[in-house]
Image (cartoon, rainbow over all chains, first blue to last red; front, side):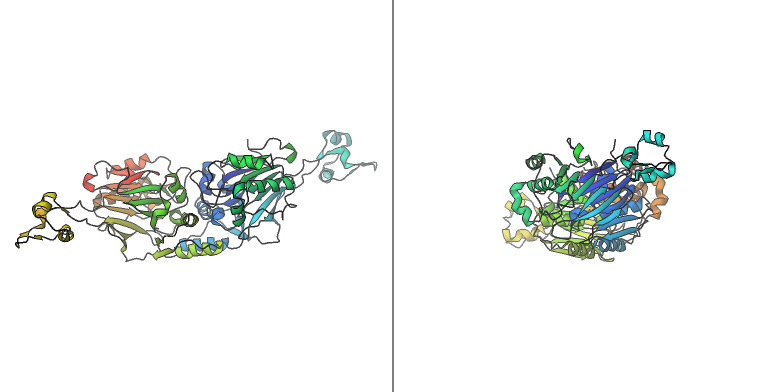
Length: 315
Length: 315
């Protein structure tokens, strides 16, 4: 059974793939909407292997234009074309990607069967996407190129009118929408019934913060505070903190420190350097600072669960 | 045990990968030299999975600039950079690839650690590579874009001086090089000993012709005549000959017909449309016209064997 709000790991390797790990990509699902976060080489094969509905992806968010985060996009776009896609596709990335894709189409002599709408991500901008249930904001990373994380946040849901109140007060259909939004009920004799007496509150909104690639920084800590699921890169074990700093990446301990300070529900680490074979060491080291740490493992799906319910990590 | 002259199949799928097949790439090995033929998405992972020496690749030949033949190149180049390559790399392709790679480097803000020397392939040109043992010629395909096959041909080897002749005539070291090339021996008393009496002929040179992508054509049949191993695309089974013609691809029967007419030793077919799951049907259908047909299967290595020794297919 798939959850309402979940992310599937398609790639977890930093910089170069290994024989068993792909470079960065995740497929985020919210109800029946699919969002791709990064699209590195091999992403389309991972989608096929995991039987994910490639054609349903409506929005692709590329964190930055290092090859290990976008080189699977041309092949994916080409496959969508061959599959006969007609629906417009939105691609969000730092400036430059449209030029790269356009040049490849020009030289291949191909015109895609669908419109690709490129959105340049710029510093200072925050909300880049909104629908009835969800917003997406950029998070500014600290990396060599302009690099963005993405914060997927549920909108507050409506209150539920209690069944017994519906019959007791015979609430007319025309009033129900307002009451679900928080209006009090005025009865026929003019009495005001406070909203809280006739409705139940909605579950709190959930959020997923995707943070890759970045040096350790607390500049965005308020924006991601209390994220139910925080993905934060941990390219290196902490004994390589000097290399991490030099390359503007983070370590296990740094990712865990940020999760602790931000009051995250669950921390998922990933973007492991290709030099490491064993990943469990990453989890153990991060868990010394933030116990509720899980590993991004390819092929696994992690539900975005409410922080208070997050005693058992998802996936 | 690896052979002297062999090709390893890294990708065998046409247009789009499937969950089990990658798009076009082969690694050709001659002695200790490595040549990559096409470099589609996922090629670098296939090289890693098969434990092939990625850093030893000196020359990359790209048949044409459709995505399913070159989209793995940017990632491979980036990985070679991260591995600290210093040796110059030669990349041969129809014009346009240098512009694509340069733009990606510019936008990523990266300068590769090694020099990439791009060679534009042009119509009418034939020999594009030569070393002590091997030449590579382009073969002009019939496809939508300028598309080239590649003919790898051993140079004729030197003759071997018979052991008994070495002692009988006490052939001085200074004369041996000329005799191996075919000179007669002039003894101290002026007698001419014909070369054939003191040497054995070398084995005949072997050749591997790589032909993808192309509609059926006999325009290059003289160039590939008697190729010991002929790779020819067979994107479709023959009941889809109309689609093949429309897309400028070939069928099983067409590939086999060309192999028969060209007098090839072994035919290897590949570049299978993603619509097919079962490949054995391809081999069977081609074998009705050219019995010595084998399938390009990913991960398998096929030796380039002399035609007369080719009773049992390699691999």
